[in-house]
Image (tube, rainbow, N blue to C red):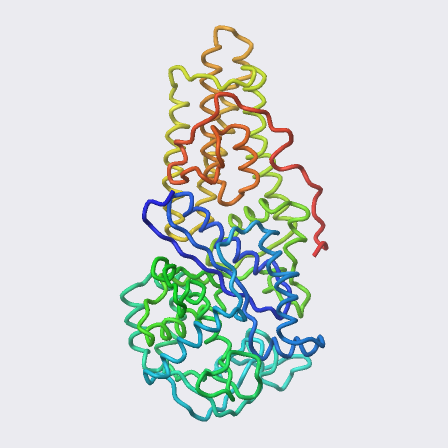
Length: 525
């Protein structure tokens, strides 16, 4: 299926200190949607996700649960993080863990190269450390605490007190790359997106970069520094390397690395700084290409606040999929939230969109078209006669929508791709209402016209199905089994969706694409 182009995309590797919530699932779905789209346009596509399992926070969490850090990580990966992928129907090509031998081998090779080339040195460091972020904080990153933490300085992200740490550490000469990073941002404005995140990163680097402390000697849960076994590697320096170790960097077989790197990184905006500053500086030091793009998407808000397990606002993805299904979960978060901006989740909104846009809009459209072909033509797909202006308008819109949706994906705007696709859904519903095939069926003289109308509607419906398949693979595969000429809908070229071929006969849907559900209660979370 490949036409020679490659598209490599990653999610962050998620920290296994706790179970996933819908914010994590949103990132997974966005990356999976982009990957599915590129697969269906013929690109050699690779999607990576995984888990970050080292660091002080994991050590403390494991200790609090009376297990070893590795036992804790194994439990969370098996019971929570890998099942998340099934829950929201993510088709990843690889899953990497920072405790994997392949990762530790690649990290060690990378670290040794930077040390040998003079980019790492030993020194003393004292600073404000947030265990939640696993990061030393600048004074500007701290805010006055409230409640139980009143009178203390707390992390602006986690709202917990920082610790003052003083250690002899190893440092990465990140300050050497300040101008090279600024040159990168200026020469490639699309390297960091959206613009709001880009502006924040550029401003941060212009304030001046300090060398980065990259080792810890106060605990031992991490990858050992190869030339000094009293130190383990700083968790972010370790974690960021997953994007290349998963492709074989540091191994005897780096074919995938040579073929697929550099990748596109989809991350939450709160960790964009690590990916757009530290990570490219690391790669520059090693003489490797920087990522193709870093996209920092917005937060999911519940009741106007960022989700937080400590505030009991973290919603498990299964709470939504158990009611609405994985396709509706994917559709809702991809369409309802402008990618790159914060978005509010509410049970009322997902329920309303499910009923109006999926059950009534797309699902009812499919059921009506197939039912009428079955009723009036005994399931045989009719042949089109002369096209009216209205018929041609549907054909033209199918081509136009496909072109614009594909352009939206290239611009990292999945919400625009789905909104554009739904223009065809709305047009088809209007077309059927206007043409009234049920009235045409009453007049034998209008038999050819009836066939043209239903065949035109079916052509448009199939185009919608192909365009919607990266977002809703289950429902569209079910529809494809009723209308397609064979194979899987995932094999259809999404960038030429209007060219899909129908079967000579359709089969009726045994049940609706989107069964009606009871109104979800706001308190379900």
